Image (cartoon, one colour):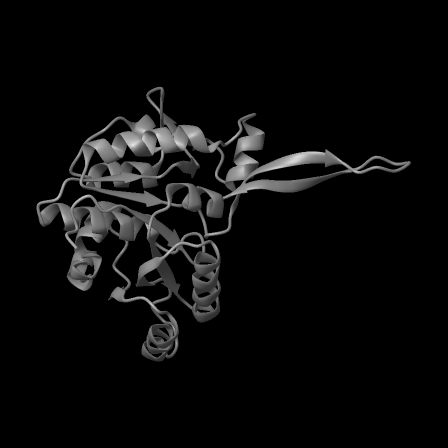
Length: 248
């Protein structure tokens, strides 16, 4: 099957494990193969106000790596200023995350590019919204009940999933649980990437081998710890470790 007009959902085993880094590298690499590419991060939390415009490093990396340049609103329909869990950020800013605006933006991006890479937020099961419900009884109390999660978002997009595994102690459990959650959602785990978070991780190769034996999807590559340069520079450097043929 040709790679043209294939789109993917990028998830991770945790937060801060390199989803944006890997997504940016994939966007750059696929563009070098002659495909038009665009990235999307439907929900981002944590922004800095510069010259009257809110900026998020992850979003700007995706925009810079894409070969198709689009307005920021299409890339990130929900940009929250507070750096915290998305449902908390939405509550703090009196907003409600809903799927229709995300799906509309995604549909528009699909019209503009051969490949759309949609990056999730945090891990695969992160709540996106919560509803306060009153408990019956003499003394009324409230509890937060999750109503919408990243799983719902991924299912609504109905895309094959690429999982970024943050290579550090505990990654095998995190990766296998994430793979199980993806399968339980009815989605296909298309491939995974091992991204080095802890450069001093003990038995690194043995951990990669264990993951390969237990994950029923091909590994696109094992990315070493790349020096803390600009995100775009590191993403370009990661291409040497990624086999994009697995996306075909």
